[in-house]
Image 1 (cartoon, rainbow, N blue to C red):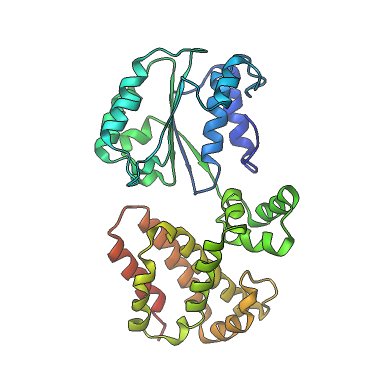
Image 2 (image 1 turned 45 degrees about the horizontal axis):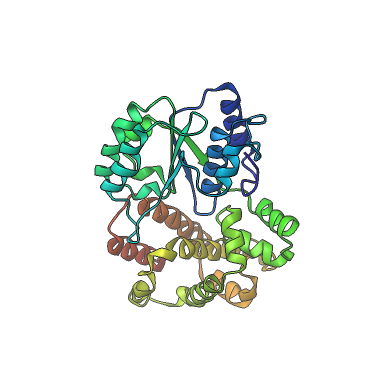
Length: 330
């Protein structure tokens, strides 16, 4: 396995390599991490090491016939299952592409790997179909379930998988990688790291995304006036929360804004703020809030992320979030 997009996850890499070397690879893994955390890179490199004919200290050699076929993207023993155009993974897909296919013996080096991307989109029915295979897999099979949250999985599935969690990396570490390995200037690197949620992949995407820049500008413009608005006014923002595809980005923008307000409230200094381009708005907003209010907003946003991971009704969730952001201490 290569470090590639997995900077900061050295312990996980070492553990998986030891398993490859010792032959103690499990049959089912549940790999959790935010978007851009490196789940796909980890799964891909682990799969390549498992089908490699001459692994070097637990890493794929990259030269053998199996590695060459893998790198071509057409390895017959490595199967990637992705959501359909609607974002779901149908039960029939699980049944045909995994449960039935897994009974066919591997072609190359005695291993057969199944990588299920966005596995949090597996319905309970699909998980139940998969469960028997996870409980009694063929000796040669390894199943890798990639997810942004384990909350959506049945306890029976979780208990039968080795859990791997790619934790968010420290923002200074992410910023240093952007500068040193990708040549991004310091200010951009620091700002992108702040909005990345500790993900190098997300930070890279943010650094070149005009769409994210527009989203950030839009929400920071709204937040500058939040402390002046009443609950009814804030609830009008609900239409801007309808785009669930960018909800993680919006939550991160909200968190960074309130974290900056806390910094200004505590120090009076905007030079270290992530939104320092809005220095005057930060100072004005910070003056209108009690410090306890600001810390409460951060707690609300953390709670909102947890609630969203439990597949709650989106309309009710967004109404609750907006009402909490509009709520002021008396």
